[in-house]
Image (cartoon, rainbow, N blue to C red; front, side, top):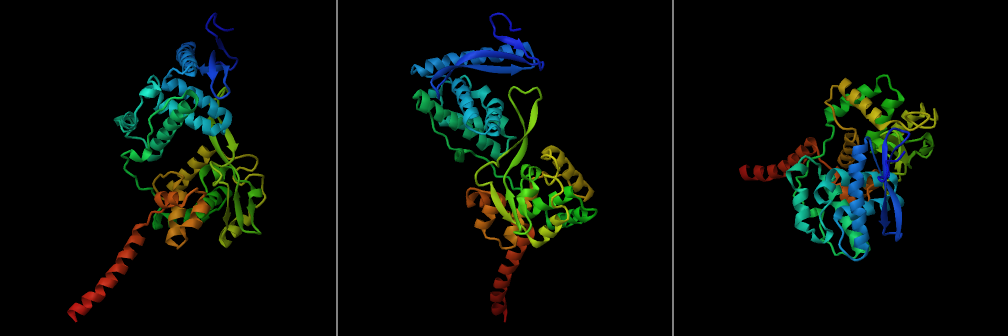
Length: 373
């Protein structure tokens, strides 16, 4: 039963839910929204903030400047209706964890590019990766664009290129580590180990290998089709904190065809068709579980713990070392632009650098031999 006059009730799943009226600028109508929490006090606090935001949205619709947090909430509800749910959750988490506390109560019209830059470069953000900082800047700019379109506010413009972010080198497995890993994987081979070999041989992401089906693999045509991905995300209104959600790849470019080598075709042939999904037969594999299995493989191979994505980085670096052109590699990896491939995944190893310098020394040696002949 709802608390009298507060629109707060306890759900059957044990959580508390609070409801309030808001304004949907996209559809230009009043709508009922909900907030959720584990306790009555948590929902009451959230509800008070959302009601304040809703009032500011009404004011903003009457050409008064709303707060950043009010516009953010309205924008997020629009994203939820128009985008993939996984995209909405990513934006929601980014806003809640990194933006709301600092910018939520700031009037949109008073925000400046310098203020946003200062927030992103503060000490609290020093532990964040470059990718996370750029995601925060992207969410802020989209909220400001929404305010400009729906509330006729001319906000500040901010480019993430202005951020002073040291570019961290992306790790790859060196030649010795690759040798030890392959030796371990080929001992008592099973489909789980084969999945690791698929990733380091094709550049598949963790979610893509976990959602891969046998129908996506054409052994006769020697092609692998990337049609879906899977990830564990939080879902509004669900009793459990997260659910395993299968969907289309992260972008239109991620849905792609990857050629398979003769060695990969021979490896997959002995497992082909055993179940609907490659790794887990009857359903997509749990990404976290498969990543933990990868950690165990590294430990058994005598390699220190590394993120699953290192397989993708290593694949790209090996392709470059083997002479694969950047355009082909970009399409295999599913990038929208070759610049992403160049800036993120091409990392010459020490052996490659040494070869270049030895070649240069050979040229210098010719001059030196002539000088002292």
